[in-house]
Image (cartoon, rainbow, N blue to C red; front, side, top):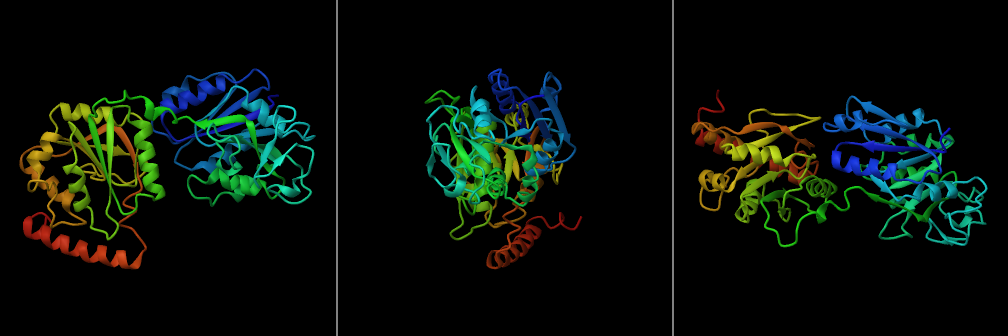
Amino acid sequence: MAAASIIVHLEGGPERTRRCLESLAALADEPTFEAILVDDASPDLAELLAGLSGDVKVLRNERREGFVPSAIRAAESATSELLVLLRGPALLAPDALHHLLAACDETCASTSGAPGAPTRHASGAASDGDETCAAGWGPPGAPMCGAAAAATPEDTGAHPASTHALAFRRRDADCLRGAAGAAAGFELAAVCAELARRGTVVTVPAAIAAPASTAVAARQTPGERAELTVVVPTLDATAPRVRACLAAITANTPAPHQVVVVDNGSPPQGFTAPVNAGLRAVDTPYAVVMNDDVEVLEGWWDPLRAALDDGASVVFPRTVEGAMREDFAAWCFALGAGTIAEMSHAPGEFFDPVLRVWFQDTDLLVRLRAIGRPPRLVRESHIRHALSATVGTEDPALRAWIDRTIAADKAAFARKHPTVLST
């Protein structure tokens, strides 16, 4: 039986997934392990995962379940007494598994894999491995090594909650259910918190794990001219959904690109104003406009660029795992610099400024149809979309302003296109 079961939650991205698998293949021969990959309804991993062999189990969710339910399913399938849970397709250093399993040893003979090396508790205190967890992150008197967290390359003493790989005993796998309500991106931290109720969770400095996307942004040649500008309007550039949007662009856009984030939340101005401002900054052959709750998936850009080069004026990708419009899903669309100039409502104003929050995309759709060049759906390009999370705000003042503005936009659109809404 393998000494450990390594669980990897996969949502998509062949390149990141391939790098993760390569890092698993490069782990030291001892300790032995099985890999359990949970394909969480990804749109682009079938071919890669179909070619795997050896001590690898592939579990597939028919619909997106999320990190914690996927980890629970994998833990139920595990055969080893120790589980190593990765946060997405992380990269483990070749000796990381050895150090994590040593830290989880019942005897606590070694907490770092190297005699005398200190281990960082969740409390921030250093330990020589011979004490209980009374000073650590866990209940007094609990075993010193309740769970072991890998360190990050940037900080070998990082808090366990920031880890990309967490090792714990399979008998404690029911703690995963206690983390089920964690917000996206904080699931592994929640698992750490649940495990800390049973024993100390420690960071193991000698075990290094990093996200597979770390090196992606460095692929371009310094000084190379960008071919693409991505415009992202938002009410809060620090929001988690914006960070997820930008991370997806960075990880999944190999073409030279630049991103223009227009934060118009003080006070909110709607959608048209920030998009127009962002498009005025475009100095590249191509541009993409996307909502801040869009996440592009691997391989998204090349098919859009090919469709533009084929003569399309405006193109848009297919939205997976959510609502989709096939006439014009304007939460993410691409166009060339020529179309920006040709289809602008006025110089420097791509969308009609009268339509502040709603109907500006429908106005563009009507105008493109009128010249016989409607937006083109590119099915080979894939994104995810949270369906206008900003417009769905629960803030009462913002909600009231949006409702009033949408009503005004509808009236303005009806004046501009009197026959469209009535058909």
